[in-house]
Length: 417
Picture 1 (cartoon, helix red, strand yellow):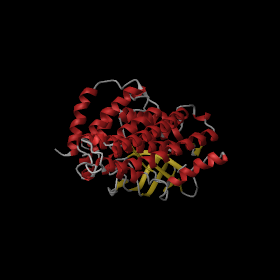
Picture 2 (cartoon, rainbow, N blue to C red):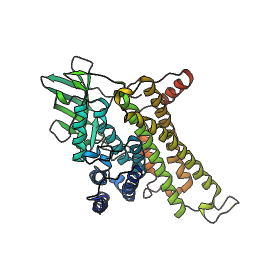
Picture 3 (cartoon, rainbow, N blue to C red):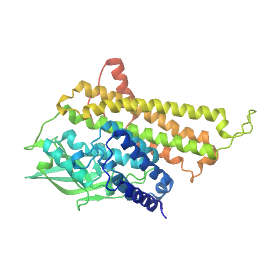
Picture 4 (cartoon, rainbow, N blue to C red):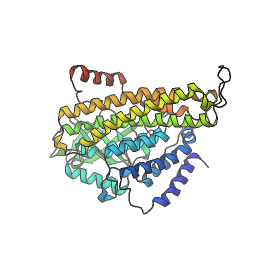
């Protein structure tokens, strides 16, 4: 049985228990559901990472569990949960599989995109569509690439261009497109079905880590969208709100929780190995019978776990604050409040990145040389965290926090702040 088949079989077996059930009502019950999903993913994470196949069974698991519609309206069968819960769900899933945690986190951001920039009618239509259909979002919105070009063709917009990265790729049901209207500096977002002739994925994602995120390049060729579906536009005119700029701090906190989940997985996996396989060091003059009695091993795990708990507390604080404004009336958000939250998110992200990388590397010192075997799979955590934490330069996050502390300045909204 292949790893993908094993995941599919486990997902199907669990779905028998979930079939016909109403979605959990309480946040803690959703976290329990996420832990069930994580247990399934952890069982064959090493094999699936090595196989590097499109994560179709894994996405099916997310759908069967209800996690895909966690933020969706209850009236359409969704969980009706808050972002505060969604961030913790991402962290739990990422502890077992960073790739699938990323897919889920990006999905939550794109599923919320209509609320970020859409009209009331667009929000209602998109949330009913993805929630009732249990659909997964992907996004071709890499700011470092040139924008897609958009041509105004009467009642329709026509998207063309190429993006180097498009997380979700071939396994998504819906894709978020972003481009610039020809002859203007107007950016337009639109949600389109992924499975159509005008969207061609290259299948060329082959990086060090996050191997199952389907984040390869995509060609967009004459994809047509009704002007009525241009997010936030009425009569071809966009009405901006400060709320529109929450997309960046929202996704940056997805990153922080992704990293914390990966770090938690590294520590838990290493601890399990230490308990069963690591040998005590017999040449230190303080011989121990078991590795779990070694003072430097106990000290090491104590340091890594206490740091992780502190970082999780910071991320939860940021999650509580951004969740409050994400679920508030869109017109209430001020530039100052938005900036203060962005600074807190930046602090959470930089701590999660630096401390997570340390944990993912340090665990090898606490498990021993034999733990470097490919069959153990401890390398996955470092590879995943190292790969995604290069998304945007961490020193700029430190500068944002520093400018706020020293000068009281908040970050100017951009594609990365």
